Length: 211
Image (tube, rainbow, N blue to C red; front, side, top):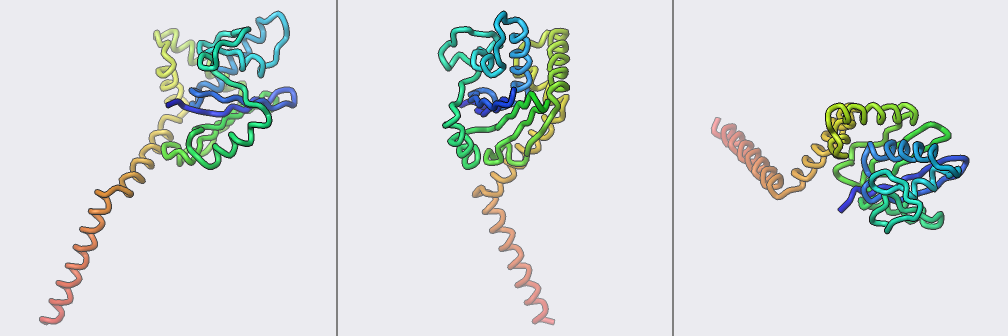
């Protein structure tokens, strides 16, 4: 099981799509973009962000010769395959998020798949990329200061600071409520409730007759 997402990177008038098996979260998009931009500055030969994305490993390092797909954060999606991913996102829950990084418009858009019960009420969120990158820089400064290096711990700090943690918990609470309402226990409680109402109505009618 992963946290599967599709990333759409827009730069220089071109869209490039990627699949990320562990990319469905609010921190990875801006973190990976930040890493790619830093690598772009260091490379002797100018490379697009799309090229760098396809060569990022899980540690954010640049692998000139790609490692096996399982060791790379992104896998490129061919143009002709994008429609199949769009269809899978629209109709199922295997893809949990659709993420757009529009470098030209300075927008990072996070879309949570409503077909996933745990994201059903989340909707979508947008942040200016320049502000988001500064948030990531500050997050890692905070992590360095407090000795936090684990990604999931940093993600928790990030989600708390952005308010997403509360929205994610609300979405999960909605999922748990829906699951309960569909459960045999809830059905049994509803049955007992209607039986109680019927008994009260019967007793009320009997009292009226006796009067």
